[in-house]
Image (cartoon, rainbow, N blue to C red; front, side):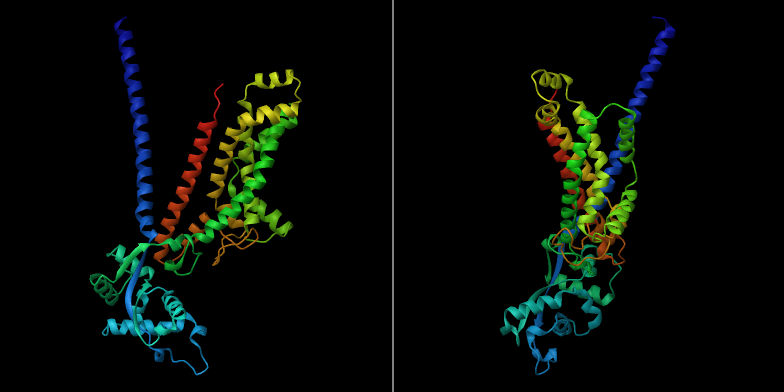
Length: 411
């Protein structure tokens, strides 16, 4: 080999090494960005799974309620029980601003006292120690002492309670059983999770059978003509259409024309089904194309009809690919927000939906609502909800990979 050829070969080797180095650097940078993103969300969201409570001795003196003669305890609103809380704070911190200190307790503290008294009226006239929910501001200060949301008297009171061991931290199971609320400490994710379940169920029931049947017809029975080619091009284009366009279509057809209930999982599921249709069709056609033609030819040679070939041979062999594509399409739909904003699923819903026509919201929309709230406590709730949604998406993608590996057939 001449010296010129050797130099050229060495330059090629160095170029290949530089190209490999560039690829590794790009991959490392992408992984670093992913770690920083997930780390930022996790650092903010994981504390949101914990709730902060304050153990406080409360004097249950009926005279504090200023009851009328014809009033009964079980008929009083929970806000009337705040008189007990003010008396407890006054006894604990006699020199503090009681109105200022009352903001350390959550808005449901009065309800906690009412439930306890309704369960045992013998508590009236005694002083009992209760574990009461703390406000979101108090919880943020205890998790992040550099928070500037509290006044000086509130900070000193919390430090005294913390030194006395009166601060209780526990897992907030109510986050998965409560609906949304105006106060961050009472807000839960159960309503959005139930809304997403009903919406995805409608989406699956509408998109899967129609999408699979359309793909089977286009791939196995449709004649190869200009019309079929036009349909194929349009299906591929629909898969790339911005999701908000499907929201406008759902608003025009399902709400303005068909007069279906606004902000209901029924409308949300049908709207997302429009978006998932092209994904399922493309995935199904790809799975059907992967089945060797020899299987079809052998079935036809044995006397099977074209429909029997598809139903008994081609479709079962393509099912793993169809399932994988469907799960990935549903994973995309469950994280969509824009189409559902157009059909009104952005309203504040304080109850867990009980059916397909109940007013509801979904997980990504709930995250959007919390992120746009001015209260500092909703910042933590937003990160916690994002973690739940990311975990669900990770599980769905892992299920798709598992099904593909388990039922994949290599020809």
